[in-house]
Image (tube, rainbow, N blue to C red; front, side, top):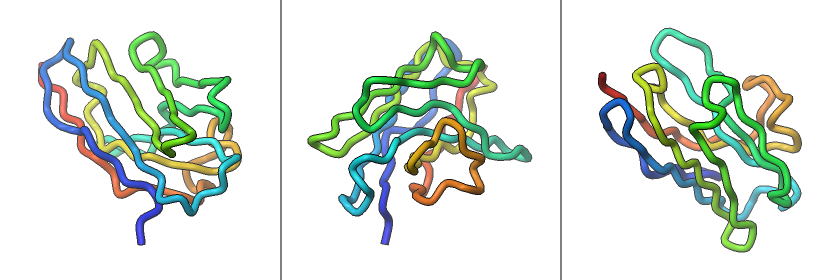
Length: 123
């Protein structure tokens, strides 16, 4: 039983754009933050971005700030990540996540995960 389902991954050349989406099954508490982590081959999972349950505040890692934009539709229970000016170092499996306070949590602490979607950026 998957609580979060991602879509929208794929392959793109450097400088291109992709949009990831995540659907919430409805089992996640409505006041939880949602966000994205990613894992590149041979590396630990790292925080990418998150958004508060109201959508009023967003957070980004330094590596994606200014290029990625996170948004959520609380009524539709969906989360999106618009990724622009993609770089080869953005290549990773991207995971949709949710917990009370995603922005300050280590990936091992986060309770809800999607199955992941692959993003590949070629130079």
